[in-house]
Amino acid sequence: MGMSCDICGKRPGRGHKISHSHRVSKRKWHPNLRRVHAIVDGTPRHIRVCTRCLRSGRVLKAA
Image (tube, rainbow, N blue to C red; front, side, top):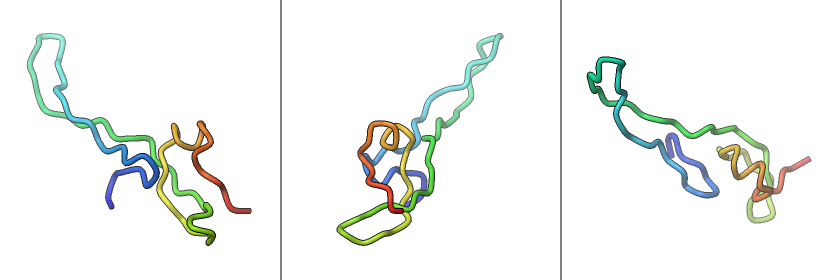
């Protein structure tokens, strides 16, 4: 599970942090995940969803 969206599967991106003097070190960009009470297969459950999926309406939130 970890840092991934349960709807679209978005995971952390990897790359380099580059300073002003152009020294390079490794870094990660984490997805903006939220724990949401949603309807999954007809039953209410807590899932981890990125804000892009929430905003686009891919998640049916439970009451």
